[in-house]
Amino acid sequence: MQDTDTTKYIIHSKIKADGIVERPDVVGAIFGQTEGLLGNDLDLRELQKTGRIGRIEVNIKSTAGKSNGTIDIPSSLDKTETAVLAASLETIDRIGPCIANIDITKIEDIRASKRQHIVKRAKHILTDMFDENIPESQEITDEVKQAVRVKEMVFLGKDNIPCGPNVTDSDAIIVVEGRADVLNLLRYGIKNSVAVGGTNVPQAVVDVCKNKKVTAFTDGDRGGELIIKELLQVADIDFIARAPDGKGVEELVQREIIKSLRQKIPVEQAMDMYQIGGHKARASSHPKRREERRDIRPRIVKPAVKSRGVERQRRRPVKPQSTVSGEFKEQMSELSGTLSGRFLDENKAVIKEVMVRDLANSMKDVDSKVKSVIFDGVVTQRLVDIASEKDVREIIGAKIGNVTKVPTDMKISSTNEL
Image (cartoon, rainbow, N blue to C red; front, side, top):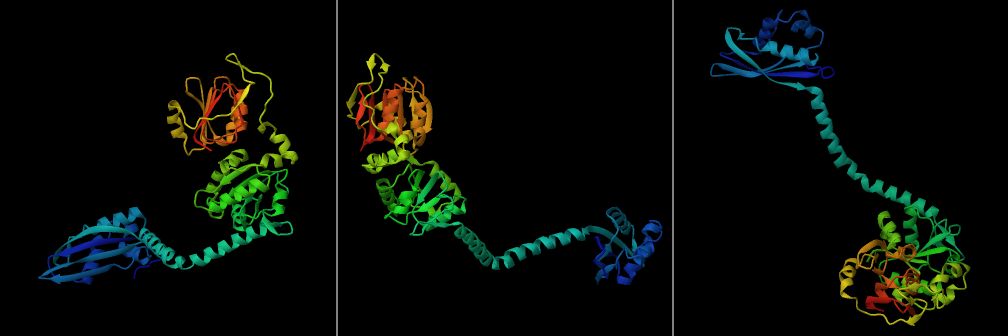
C-alpha cells in the first residue's frame, strides 16, 4: 500500500503485451529485468525494503489475446532518482513468453496535488462556511465602532446638545444638523462639531459660536438650506459648506466630507446667495468680527489711486449690467458650476485660476497686470473694494450681491442679477 506520509511522486505508465499476462507476471518482470541495471543504490528490491518505493499497483485486462493496463509506482526518492527509475521501466520488452512494451505517461508530484486540493478546499470553506458568519461579525464590528463613537460624544449646555469633545476648546468648530451628523464626523476623527437639532437653533449653540471660526455644514436638501438661513440670522457664522445634492452629512464617507468642507464659501457670499440682511450690524457687537470684517464695509474715503489719469477715489452708485459681453461669455460658460475664478490681463488672457473661496485673499496679492476678474460666484462689496485697490477695471460674476459703491472707471456685470 502506498505510504502517503513519505511519497513524493507517482510514476504512471501504460503496458501493452502481445498475449495474456496477469499482475504477478508484470511485477515479476519489473523486478527481474531491472535487477542490477542501476546498481545497488537504485535496486527495486532494496528500495522497497527501505520504504523508498511503495507497493507497485498493476491494473491489466486481456481482450482478444492481447493485454493492456497501467502500472503505478509510488516513490519517495528525489526528482532525479525517480526519473532514472522511471526510464528503466521502459527497457522491459518481455513479460513471460509475451512481447511487451511499457511507456511512461506522467510523473505526478504528490505535493502539488495536495496543494491544489488545499486551494480548492480552502475556497469552498471560505465561500460556503465563512459567509454564514459574516453578517454576525459585521454587526459586532459596527456595534463596537458605534460604541466608541458614542463614548467620544459629549453634550453641551443644559439642553444636552450632542457635540464632539473638542468643541469648547477648539478655535474652529463645525455646526451640523443632528446627532447622527456628529457621530459620522467623529467616525473620521473630526471632533469639533456641534448639532443644532433642527431649525430652532439653541442659545447654547449661538453662544459657542462667538469668538470662534464657525463653519455651518448642512445636508444637501431644502432642510439644510432653511437651517443655513436661520444660522445666518441668529448666529455668528464664518463659512458655509453643503453636502452633495440629495445627501445628508450622516451618509457621507471621509472623501466626501473633506471635499465638501474644502468647497465652503465665505459668509458674505452666502448672505448674498440666500438674500439675508441685517447680519453686519449684529456682527459688529462681537470683538472677533470688529477686526476681521473691518474691510467689508464700503470705504467711501480713502487715498487717491491714480489710474489712467482718473482718481479712483470717486465712487458712484452701482448700476450693474445683467448681461456679460461676448468676449467673456465663453469663459463664464467654462466656469459655470466649478466655483472657481480667473484673473485676466488687458488682452483677456488667463494669468491665474483660483477657487472662489480663495478669491479675495488671492486678489490682494496680484500685480498690476490683472485687469479683469471673472468667477463663478457672487460679486460683493468686499471684492469691489479689493479690486479697486489693485486697479482692476472689470469684475464679472455669476450674480451681483449687495454692492452699493463702485469706482467710476470700474465695470461689474453678471449672468444673473440678484
